[in-house]
Amino acid sequence: MSEIQPSSRGVNGSRRRVAVVFGGTSSEHGVSCLTAAGVLSALDRDRFDVVGIGITRTGRWILVDPETISRLGVTDGKLPELGENAAEAVLMRVSSGSELAVREQSALSHLGPVDVALTLLHGPFGEDGTIQGLFEMMGTRYVGAGVLASAVGMDKHYMKLVLAASGLPVGPFVPITPAEWRRDKTACLEATAALHYPVFVKPSRGGSSLGISKVDDPAQLEEAIQVAQAYDPKIIVEQGFVGARELECGVLADLDGGPPLASVVAEIRVHSKSGFYDFEAKYLPEEQVDLDVPADVRPELASQVQELAARTFDAIGCEGLARVDMFVTHEGDVVINEINTMPGFTAHSMFPRMWAASGVSYPELVERLITLALRRPVGLR
Ligand SMILES: Nc1ncnc2c1ncn2[C@@H]1O[C@H](COP(=O)(O)OP(=O)(O)O)[C@@H](O)[C@H]1O
Ligand SMILES: [Mg+2]
Image 1 (cartoon, protein in one colour):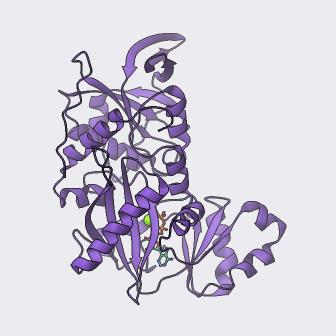
Image 2: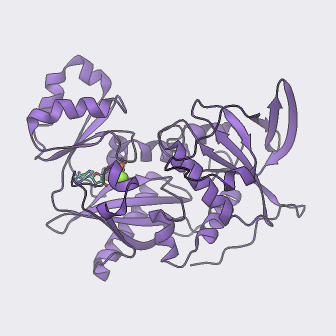
Image 3: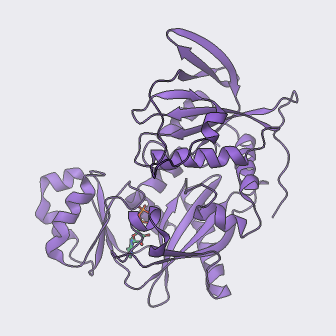
């Protein structure tokens, strides 16, 4: 792996200014706040000047000072949440890129340029290309995948189409759009008849396993579809892989433009009642799940998973980072489940743990992502 270059100094020797963008309107608001606190503790403040942009639950952009971000944590078993009553953060397009200002009452105070945005948002309106599009329009460099890769990575239906068209292994699936469901429910249910049970019914653009059901019996299918539709009007029904192993692999873009780099492979072993990696298993007590970093797999399987992860990253057109999740079926076939373009990113999350086990510490990881973003041009690339 190549050295991380200390390219954090601006041309005039000043520290590069990083806007840490966190919170957000999705169900992962609190997790994003914890991630921001973790990232702040890892950022070298001698090299990077940090400004915090919090997005409240209602979608307001507010200025949050770095010390406040560092203190965000779980209190009385509750995840942190940004208050609504703070001065508004305003991002403005200027000829050289973008600038940040703060608006209090109606007075606007300029805070100077933003060199790079480090968005730590998960789910819709964070990981799906929308905020990435805003940064493109604003001329702001940002960490991670661009507009198209973010949008494709978020939508399980299009993700599978792109991967399959690139010759990558995905399981059988049937998408159901809200228009199709409105027009003819019976035809939608019939379209899934070729899938073997159990099937998994998912919101197409969901995360954290919210709205996902494992369905053992066709009589329960319609109800599961309605559960998923509460999270996203577009849903996907997938063939279930019974007794499959769940492996994950972290991918990082190469600093010098070489092929993407894959981390050690990790395994998730779930013992939850639902029998899959559901919301409770992801966020509640550890007894439900064992996380093996690295996974206990044969070297050939590890290499296969790493190669598929890097090819998935390229097929989607990812930049920066991604976590690719796979199943190894009972028969030993490797199938790609999904790509996450903004994977969980606290120091204890799988992505940083897989990279730590591969020799890239959490602070190095954060710095590498910022360096990658600073190096890439704005606009079409
Ligand atoms: N086709 C499938 N076969 C078996 N298990 C599945 C399948 N799809 C999902 N799962 C289980 O559900 C979990 C969540 O599904 P996933 O597609 O990763 O959704 P999310 O984007 O919410 O993480 C997976 O980690 C896995 O445990
Ligand atoms: Mg997942």
